Length: 141
Picture 1 (cartoon, rainbow, N blue to C red):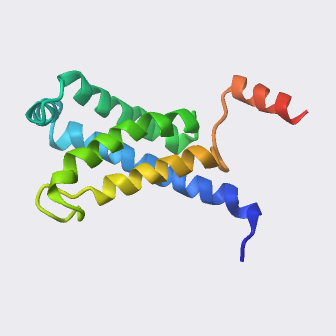
Picture 2: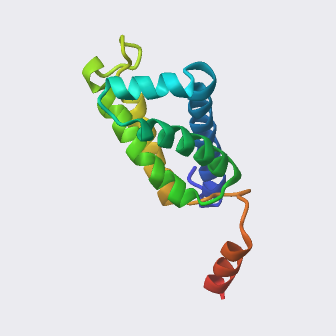
C-alpha cells in the first residue's frame, strides 16, 4: 500500500526520532562526558575547542527544534556536517559501530536520514512561527 496521505505522518515520525537522537547526544556530551571532556576528545582528534561547543549547541537546540518542527529544513542541513564529521572520525574503526572506537555506519545512516528529512519537510504536528504561517498561506493562495 502506498498512500501519499500518510507521508506527513512518516515525516513527523522521522523528524521526532532525529530530534530525540540529537537531543540525547547533546545531553550525553554535557551530562556524561562533560563539556570539558568533549573538548578534550575533540582536541585529541586535532579539532578546535569551538567545534565541540558548536556540536553540543547544535545537537541540543537542533534536537528541540526538530522535535517541535521548527526550522526543520535548516536544522537538518546544519546537522549534516556534524554527522559527516562523526562518520569520518569513526571511519578508522571500520564499518560496524559496535567495533572498538565505534564504526561509521551509524553516523552515515543518520546523515542520510537528515537529508531525507530536509527533503520531506516538517510533516504533521509541526509548530509554525507567525511569519512561517503567513508565508505558507501566501504560497497556497
